[in-house]
Image (cartoon, rainbow, N blue to C red; front, side):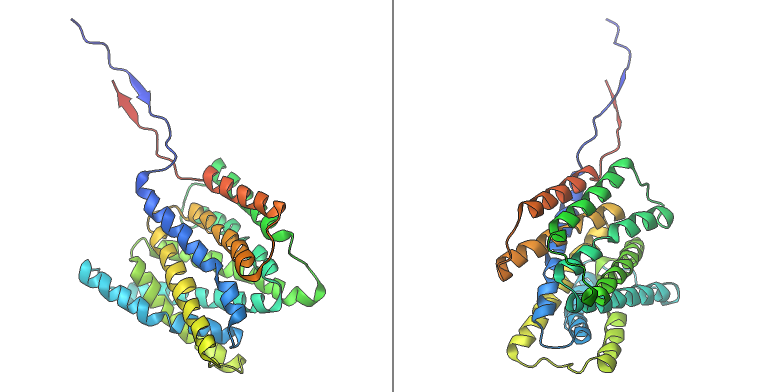
Length: 312
């Protein structure tokens, strides 16, 4: 009996590679953790630059312990200072700028305004990923970016109020988006040759020193005034910095940059839910619609397995 001639078929595109499930979950949790930062900044009893400094300073011992643990468990290639010090300094400077203007924005405009303006980050990330990182920007990714921004606008736009008194804080929100978008791209680039622990610890030292100088020069309250104030700063460091940024840094080593920036829209959803839970702010139909659009945008832009031939 003769064998049938060999035929080739294409396997259907899968929603996502199962190997991406852990990084995706890490990024979602990181976004939720970062979404708590506006509440901690508002509750802190120190100035905006001091709270940014303490966020980093209190995180440093934990980041160093993470680095040493990673080195013992799985020896890491040492940092090449001659090659990497400029990149480390650049990432540290960008994150210092992000926190500097983010905390200013939170305290000088409404939290919805600051959050809404910061959600323009994926636009800059998409352009930079295409131009610098040479990532392909497909129609589903563009659809996801557009859907996510529309969703974020609906989610927090109903509460946003653009009034003259808030112009300074609103401008700071836009500057925050520029800094964070560039930081996100630089972090993604660094993850190609550094571990998550390395890109979190070494730039954090630079960020802490810059923010210390800003706090000493511009704030009149550097030290927390009570045990409650200390607790707020510790939670800001542990939740928003170590958990939020650490999980994001881990995920960036495994996921496309633009898609990762879209998943960070979960930060907006988390901020709205925390405002409802902590501040008793109602959740409206518009906000539910916005959250749905964000989830749809993430689904549209999800990584897909390449079609591979199946021989039968």
